[in-house]
Amino acid sequence: MKARSNVYIFAFATLISFLLGSQKDTLDYSIAIRVVFSSYLMALATYIYNDMADYEVDKINKINRPSVTGKATRRQRIMIVLLLNGTALLFTFFCRRV
Image (cartoon, rainbow, N blue to C red; front, side, top):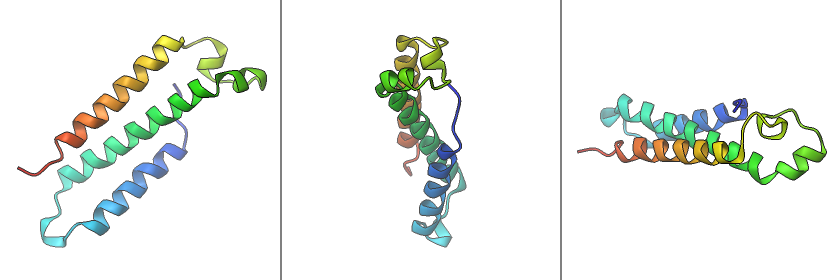
């Protein structure tokens, strides 16, 4: 599935929020990277899920997306959404401080 530029906005907003919420002496860059990457993956999954929900409308409007053109099956899209969300949840799980 093709990524949209809006996905980067969510990752950037997550980074800014993380930096604003962190204390200077306890800032952990490895956690910041994992949090931003998780946000990016969740945003991608959300857009792909939205494409699945809007399939009929996009088909009528002849939108040029893999889901409408038949390059990606419904099963493939579901698997991608599950994989992206699962990976994002794993990254956020490992963001905890020990």
